[in-house]
Image (cartoon, rainbow, N blue to C red; front, side, top):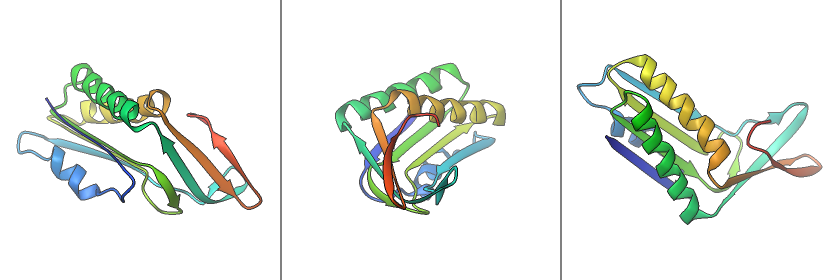
Length: 139
């Protein structure tokens, strides 16, 4: 069981995550890349701010990875998240999963992003034209 956890203010490296889960025994690699979009509902988003309590966030990200490794038949998982101010098109989160079969990889990846959004202390603030708001885990 292999995991890679990374929490940083610097841009995330999609290739690094994919390479981490790539292995000849894997028949599937699933990659989720979250990007900052330019809208929420009818509001124009200008940027996002992610804040975190890093020691606890890393610990919780570790728990998500370990749970995914134990719950699904996967060989490896990378969970990388960025904090700080991000502009439209930038990447706040990358999750990569390697597995022998695609179903386990898809299921583990979906579990990881859903759980991360609800349990890891990373908070998101959206800045709109004329306002801003802290966003709950699920809109």
